[in-house]
Image (tube, rainbow, N blue to C red; front, side):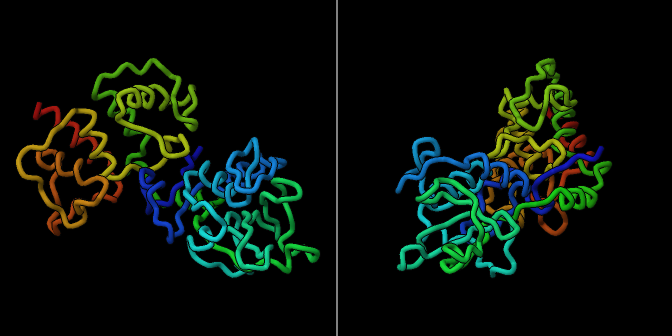
Length: 307
């Protein structure tokens, strides 16, 4: 069975929670979005409320739901209306934020579009509920626009992305965990993985659990390890530096694609200063490119020889 992975093949999972407020990012699946949003149907409304149990307002609700999916929204509906990119009504997709003028003074209500002209929001009359976007009695005439702050994938889209990667060449996070655990001679008998997408019966359970205990591998903002996702050279650099306790030796090497502001700068610099990884002829490191099995095995072998 093919492994499924949720992030775009151009985005590393470690950066999921670091997107800019004005850029749409790829998040979870449409099904995850809907199930997360719908599980709070009936939650009570409270003006200014942020607690899903004791009372929450419209923007507090959208903010809460999106936070469960690793996406940060601003606090008020007016502020959320400044995030992401504008979307026309005929191009709405599940997960788009839809806005309404219910006060006569501009943006005053926000909800989450679910598809089929339906949206879900925290209302003053019924708490969290699903309504029709084109409701002729109320919402239809008050609709003023939509914003896209995230793109939610479908199962079909995930399979297409997976097919674009040759996992016989490029190493997945799960396979990297197994090889690294073996190289470190870690005890992998504990199968109670802390990651929600790595079940005890998974072949990755022991390795991911052992590596997590040492803080070598951590999950994303949703508590997932994403074992079927490809690992980048930057992510691999971080894992190796932490795993082997490597430290910077001398002046750090510079690479055209790894600025000092890049999240992986320190790890790449340390790996390079120890002679474990080198740059390319064009002066780049390939920090965001996928690591191959050859890269992984070569790096581990070099580290062992250097110790």
